[in-house]
Image (cartoon, rainbow, N blue to C red; front, top):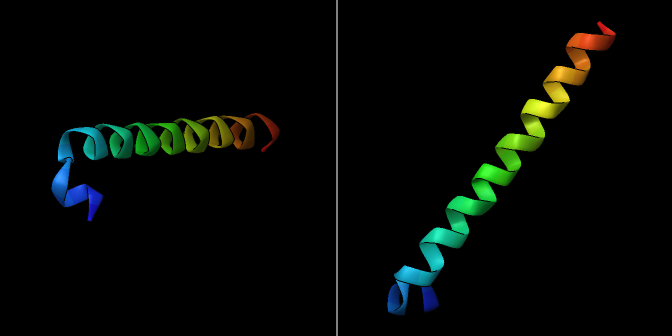
Length: 36
């Protein structure tokens, strides 16, 4: 319900989480390429 009431706070935090996960995946891929 909070997401519907205050999208201004919910959406930015959601995108931050997505960016954080994307950065982790990129780092993991880089490590795999190094060890491959």
